[in-house]
Image 1 (spheres, one colour):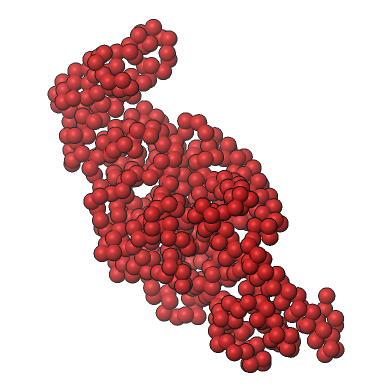
Image 2 (cartoon, rainbow, N blue to C red):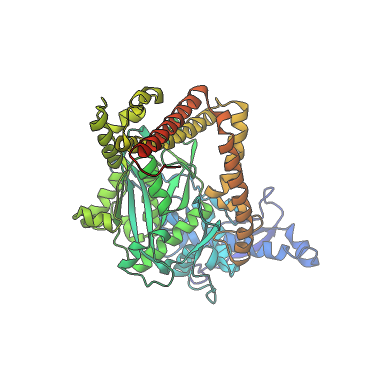
Length: 550
């Protein structure tokens, strides 16, 4: 900075600055608020000298940024990526101009940095030069400034892993840590489309192939499914799709959740009846580490807004790849649809579609997770052949009112009864999901009853930390949580998880009171059908001489 600013810079104390302004830089002069001077001279305010020093560096950074070698940092596309003024994806690719507002609003050292890129540079150069912990809290930005300005001192000893709040519904610990060295590969995880408007092009996520503890990274890690994680942009933790047009106006949040792969597979294949395709991405080890570092920054700082066309799951996933792996910024992978991003990744040679050449091997190795829909169709075919059921598709059968299915259920034998019992259980899971979605839409649309509003507000309040984990921390910390903050997080997140589990149990127990009469009738009808099938199967089994079933 001294070599670049090759002219004298005069520093003066001034009483002419606007209210609330403590510093101002012109071409050859920096003005500081004279009100700071008595506190510094008298020693009454220990922080006054620090504020003056930070202000001086802030204004000096503005002066340097205007004439920096290689151009202003505040206009550098890479700095804008790292800072949070992200690129926009369009139907035809990427739109570099007109970057949206900076939504990295959580865990900020000074919200003034979000006003404009020039202020972001100035604020962050303050911390780069004055805070030894900056390298650990904002590692990517620290590397950027070090490359542009040189080292700010001895490198800090930072943790080798990243902490995150586990949004899964299982497990004992709410706070977990991910070591990039255990991540063998990253896949582009695509959920098949369905009939819902918001899911017509599928849903895009990233799958982290995490190796079991003690296993060296390699192909065998693909079999460690219980350790694999999914990075998924959602409005709420239990949303696998958005079913409201409110997504057109940005009234849904868009946040990065970290979920167990096993839970995601169950959500899509068993409940939504949608398959999943997991396409490996050709990334180097340092690129995987950079991508995970960026994901951690998003997890702790990002509070986005969901727009059906311009900022959906595909766009969010694309931006994560674009910002986390610099090589991909020029690869032309931007698209507004999940399938579009995948096709562009394949054309760029980043995604490897050859793993699906052998369908059986793809299933065995976990590149493809089949929807249970074909399995349900086979079960239905068994009952259809035995009972001459009129519907050709299992969806049509499950869409019937339970009372309409009952006459056929009363005629079942052992084989067809067992098949229909499994289908009734599947219908029950799907109906409960529909009740949950209907209740959520009523709440978001302002049509919910007071009792429904109270319950959902409690659920959203208690579960908000899963999407915005920064809410778990108070105090002056910023960026990625450090050692002392991790200890606080472990306690606070554990307490929140316990309260949320209890609240969910309470809601489940009292869910009938929140349902409309038609919803209760449907679930009661399904339960009655299941009970009837159970009774018939036990009676038929006993009649054939088998041991009486419980």
